[in-house]
Structure formats: structure tokens, C-alpha cells
Image (cartoon, rainbow, N blue to C red; front, side, top):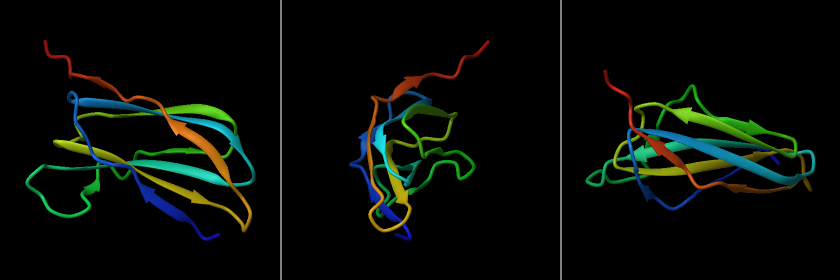
Length: 105
């Protein structure tokens, strides 16, 4: 399997910053990677990668989180990619996003 990618539905941005958490429940030899995509409501198309240097990746049963600071526009969704060999699989879920504002002095 070279890789299979799916996009989740769009959700509205909650605050300035996002903490996303991947919860891998069970997995064979696959690797699952999550990236955040974003766009404004007036923009057509698939959106763009919020920050190309940030992602969540796992090949084990675990929870992993990442934080996107000031990266999200009006709409947000996840791009989830699974890579591995034929017959590899993963059972996972994305936990509810945590939104928070940037602190100002």
C-alpha cells in the first residue's frame, strides 16, 4: 500500500490555536499521519495545509497530540494518511479538538 488519504468534513475554527489528538486503538504494521487543512469560507477548493512542518504520526497503540498556533483560518479539517504494505490496517479516532486563544499581555 503506497498510501491512502482521506479528508474529514470541515468544522468551524473555535479559537486562535488548535490542539489535535490522534488516539490509535489498534494497528498492524501501518503508519497513520494526520495533518490539519484550513481555508476561509469564501475560498473554493480543498484548502491548504495549515503548517507543513506540523503533523501527528504513529505506528503504535498510543495517543499523540500536536499544537497548531495561529495557523487556522475559518474552516478546519484533518487529512489522514495511512501507509504500509498490503493487508496493513489501523483502528483510530480523532479526539475532540481543543481550541484556545493566544495569550496577550
